[in-house]
Image (cartoon, rainbow, N blue to C red; front, side):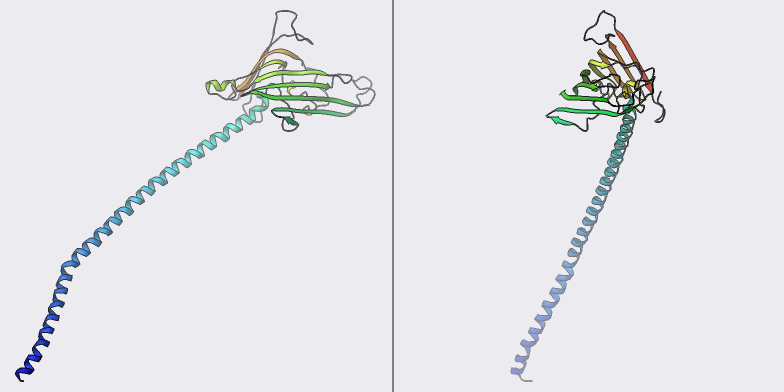
Amino acid sequence: MTIAQLRRVQPRRAGAFKCWSWLGLVLIAGQVTLPAAETDVTGQLEKLLQDNAAMRAQLQQQQEVIKSLSREVANIHKADTQRDGELSRLMPAVKEPEAAPASAGGFSLGKVRISGEGGAGFFNSGSKGMFPNAEFRVDEAKLFVDAPVWGEVYAFAELNLASHEASDLYLNVGELYLDFENVSRLWGRDGQLNLCVGWLDIPFGEEYLARDAVRNPLISHSLVDFWDVDEGIELYGSVGKVSYVAAVQNGGYGSTGDVNGDKAVIGRVSYDPKPWLHL
């Protein structure tokens, strides 16, 4: 090999040496930087695992809170259902005085509701009864006017056009009163105390609650039907399974005044130990 050839070969070897040198430097750099990259990835994975665990713990806490709220809502709904059932069971005995029977019907003039009811039929009592002549008869005809006054204060008026006891048609005022409902809410109790003031049915017994033709299951009233309308004040309500009515009235008859200072005091207490038992 000549010197010229040697000179031509040496640059190639030098270039090869340089190439292998750069490759060695790259491998060394890779060996140096690779552990740092692995450390960075490992830290990120650990952080992700920690964040995931924290999110799972937070989600579990939220699920526990949701379960607790669901139980509270279920208990509240159960208590409301039991209370509504108790009130619906007691309402027939507590509802004093008798409200307008056709409150769901009738028509309304703003806040004033006018409704009515009546009954007609064929009556034949025999020669010794009230209807010896086998007659067609309008047995009852009534108009009711009901209007809210303020809050839970209501005005009620009853107009009688015909009744079972009257021999012909007539116009007469029945009940006429102001009803202050749920006064016991002032001390946080529903239905314990209600108050009526005006011309009211005398709350003697319970038959007066079903004297209307559409409510009375009989064709006539019982022999002990002691009934009238009188001026005064009436308290009514219920405490648990016990309901009550108490009234102080003039004790007169057929008059808007009183002939003396004596007053009639009438009271009634009802007890419903079971849904099917009313005392």
